[in-house]
Length: 77
Image (tube, rainbow, N blue to C red; front, side, top):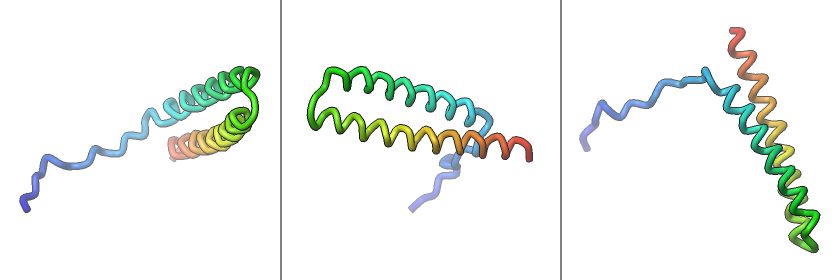
């Protein structure tokens, strides 16, 4: 096996992580709102599936917001 020195990992660039996370929060909220609108015209199990997915989205948003706070703390250091 030959090793190629050109396969070095990229350095960890966290400079725009908070910006990306904020965009992910906005996109997730937009998806939740669209799902709520869809749910108005949905019945049965599909309606419950949408409700469950939105609950998972809420959990994701909480995680994104914690990561945004972590990024802010890391910038202070």
